[in-house]
Length: 440
Ligand SMILES: O=C(O)C1=C[C@@H](OP(=O)(O)O)[C@@H](O)[C@H](O)C1
Ligand SMILES: C=C(OP(=O)(O)O)C(=O)O
Image: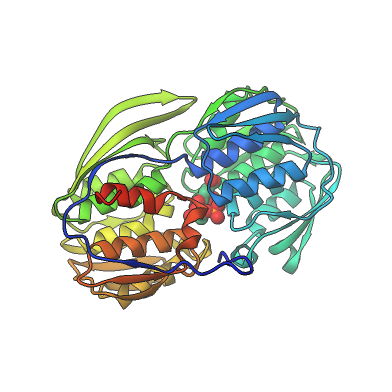
């Protein structure tokens, strides 16, 4: 849960049902996962890296702040971030605690890097981070000989990492998690021999792709990734494509608000992230993919979506890691589809910024959606009439945005509490929505 800073007012938003469809086009802001990695890997590289398209969301700003505390010189201009890399062994011991704010990606990836540093660092985050499991990274990092302490045997923050000489391992991960995979591969850069991770399903592969761009050889298969220790990163300019996880909210808005036709430009289309596209197509959405391009190791396109009738589907298995962050938005989509949508194999939702099975189900039910929680997901019965009311975001950015979507199609106003959390991943969300609703 992201908490307000002292003195900051809660940003409760009253969302009124739209009288006409969404129209026009917007450019989707930078991908959060890729932005984190760009700053982190550029810091580890030798030389200067220019990053364009960087997401200036709160999570990625937390990554910049931590890297600065490790001695990295980072210049933040309006249109680019310039990072003067320190090389694998150039970081300095931080004088202060490293605060990752609300960002699970920052703390988990940084834990991998800090495990290889010859100094001590302490990592903390906000109230939400304090509840999220860290054992999934500290466990394997300890197997590599990292010295990590923390609450409940390093299951929870604060984490204290004393780096040192690491050894390569082959880790069979019980979860498909790119944060776990990335932490282990980054520690693997500092380890003797080969470090390999095998996952139950393939998780997003931005780390593997971007390490290759920085000149590091990564051997990747459909369910594994391996790296040899000691490989240096060479600075290279990075362009960050738009975030499909942010685009997902606009795709759902376009699909469910009657009379809509919108175009989203610059949407990252890495196949490990495009589960939302598969879902929209399977539900019968009117979606066109155009202007495909490939920049800096990652594909992107423009997407046009029009309002159409939708049908419920079952979402499970290997599809889940490809759309895990989109499930709150997909629940809104499913509420407007005829028939039943079943989401299975999604226990990972319980360990995000909030328990997203509970928060999605309770808040949608509050405003009239017929929805039930299950052990590993949810069941949504459409087509539900959404009525007005007051809903909580629980300071979770993706819950906040999903509730705003409900307001667009409800019969009365929906008041969404604490929407300031949306700046974690999509700071221009309300401006973009206003632009598409013709209210500029
Ligand atoms: O590596 C990343 O950038 C991310 C991986 C996913 O988490 P897990 O690794 O826990 O699945 C995702 O939910 C998160 O928003 C970003
Ligand atoms: C889970 C998320 O991010 P993180 O794990 O980096 O906090 C998210 O953005 O939905």
